[in-house]
Image 1 (cartoon, rainbow, N blue to C red):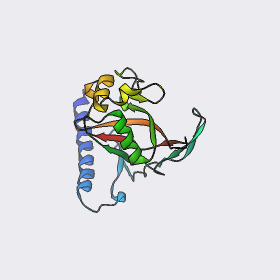
Image 2 (cartoon, one colour; image 1 turned 135 degrees about the vertical axis):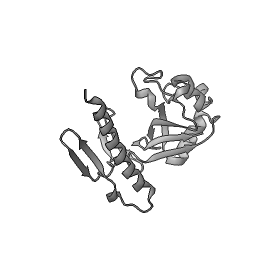
Image 3 (cartoon, rainbow, N blue to C red; image 1 turned 60 degrees about the vertical axis):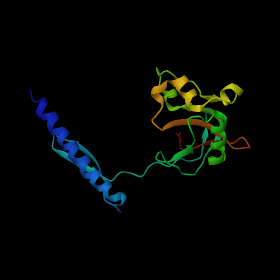
Image 4 (cartoon, one colour; image 1 turned 90 degrees about the vertical axis):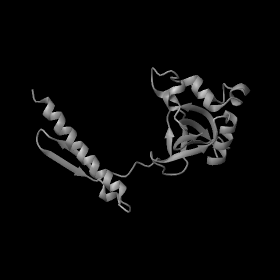
Length: 184
């Protein structure tokens, strides 16, 4: 019988703590030390505050599946970094690959939407582009239309889409990069 007061109390506590952190974001010049993570247990009246750790930096490593060394470009990127590619809705897959090469200096040999990793999704485990299998028809098609065909219209953002890819340098070395955001 006390679930309603518990929900109201929890909601009020969380809303208040989020509002405090949001006010810090809006104030210019705040250092990372000003922000806090919190863990709250209203059952035992415990409120724990801690400084958030810095984001984990990507590092070069040996990939046991590919049996290759995989390098990072740029070195030490975090999950907050993005690889931004700007284009239009009419940009073809081939033009996207050229823009990707110009931006990163790497060759994109597979390209997929992030929903390809979600089991049960429309485009589960389907590539937009795969260097081994795909030929001229896919390269000359619109990237945005291809994404809509494979994964569905609901996977397209209003003006951008997030993509994943496998990439190599001109010497065949494998690289991992920050998440790709394609603005159209």
